[in-house]
Length: 210
Image 1 (cartoon, helix red, strand yellow):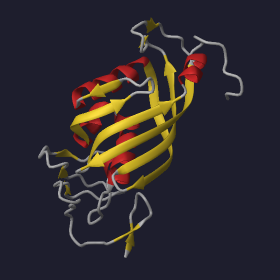
Image 2 (image 1 turned 90 degrees about the vertical axis):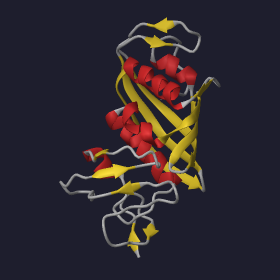
Image 3 (image 1 turned 180 degrees about the vertical axis):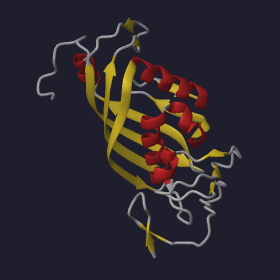
């Protein structure tokens, strides 16, 4: 019995370079964390192949390990911070739904990814520092801190725009995600919008907020 290199949980070790996760068709060939080798992989049964990048070598399970819902969500958020929305497209279901902090719903992979692109465009170096990831079957809860600098125009939920303020944000974030067939099908994001507006200088500081 070996330990999963990403999660530390016990898992069965298989010989060879092939990786299969559930019935979704996730396969990994010729990629071992910490090595310089590059290989092709397919994921989510889509059939798209690409060379493994440094980020993928770092976060994909070693050959022979199985990916579960927790692994998928952690992979998505870490890769999103390092490489942006387009790098996680294959791990997002075509019918995925994002429920934003204001309760608005964004439906469909392309619309979800476009929302993330516009969000990142308003904040340079936007990253989510992942603190805790817990899962119960296909449901995953992720806790982290969103950080970035507001140096471009931001579109607010009201439709109004906020010019760049040059301010840094440091915001607690809670994500509840659902995974099926190695793809994220739904994400609910919870964050304190009042604190966000205060950090951007739109509102007075929130009492008790760091």
